Image (tube, rainbow, N blue to C red; front, side, top):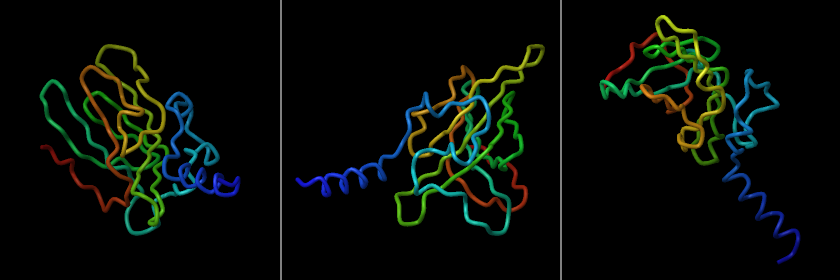
Length: 157
């Protein structure tokens, strides 16, 4: 195999499986655009009507209820005692395999206790276990990045 063929194959594999280890993705401050995951195919959701948002799914382990809701980029959203802020939400270009990636900061506001930062980092829709929220009561995962239309109430299943 020639060096040129090897490099071309490596570039294709890197484009398909370009994920950064979870320990490198977790940061304590919102990411600057230069700190986005190492995949050149990721870009913000194309402009359109509505608000750039992450579609999230929350699970309350006590009641076994799931809830889908939209969290606008740059604003805080509540799920139970959690405050979830989406700092960035990216999708793959149409030619690449579907992927949505969101930078989330999740803080727990338990009544009568000090707030606790539970998660700050990139969460991938295709591999939620790569960088998951570790909480005894709640699970939160990214479903997609989209342009949310108006204020739709969360749906419970």
